Length: 220
Length: 220
Image 1 (spheres, rainbow over the protein chains, first blue to last red):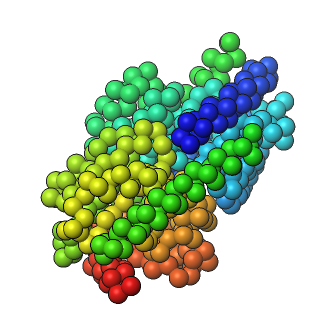
Image 2: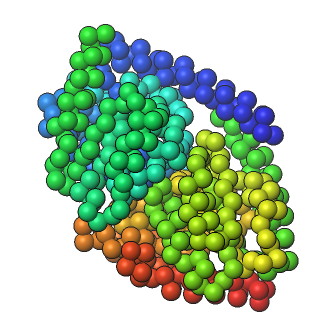
Image 3: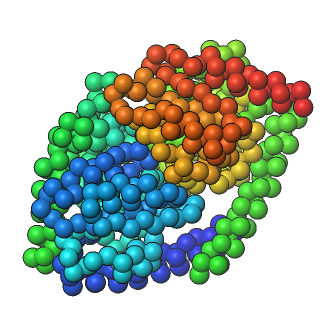
């Protein structure tokens, strides 16, 4: 049973890879950067987008992945930013074929960056290539500092690790040194950012990173 | 492809059901209660166990599920409570056959309650019956109040919903009424608890609930 499960899983992943390549080719042609945000439920993915989109001089759109509800897409839509909700109806991650279908509904001629806000989950979304240029791991202070080693694939795959809700540090016991040293062990090349949307700290650094990724992509 | 994937998934679930029944029969014979704790990464599952085990007059053991590391089992072991770590090596949830194998390593003759601390994840663990008497949904204040409707299966299946880290309420915007009204919509019969391990609030109510479940089970 286990072996058959793995075979199917590999076939699904292979199909996924071909959709991911199709997406990557399409976005390369149009010079659009795609960033895949992955973090726990409630780690602050939507809030980070709310605090940066439309303020960073870039033309953005968001693909929202959730098991159910369109609450996050409604929040992004309220900013006047194009957003499309994918409901996975129980599924624990987004897959490239859904992202591919969604791209057709976005104004690709008028975009610099597409953000994917994946289903809140540190495990499954890290396994699936959805055609992004960069995965970003979002981890929040109240979750505690042990997440990198407990969920190593995401933190190893991410181009950047963003620690959010740093304003809550005085109220929880969070070992900052442990968190960042574990990140460095897994992924010494990752960009690292500390962000408090409440205090508006670290937001310019985030926007600069996105801009540098976009410039790098357009230089080819 | 999708259809084959579903077939396999159903077969895996059917196999899982038979292990779950085996576990349930074994634990019924011995009068042991099994509780499956499910919550986001960093929602406070281990901390709740640390604050109640050995203090509630019950003989407990813990099966720890994590993608990687044995950090949580080490924390429980430090209390003198029997604990066994299952590393899923990338898997996003525990399955009943692993729990069944683990039971052989626990001192079943000397136990009242076995806690399963599932992989930190609001999606996949809710789908799998691991032989428990009760699923418990753990959600923490800093995650925000929108989790029940965004991850409805867990909150619908849970016998109890525990809101943790209530001491952080003054520092985050958490709509308590929204959270509990969404829980009530999904699952009006669930027991509901508000807990702050930092302030030692709600812990007696939790222990009383566990004791009432144990008595109910032993009455048959």
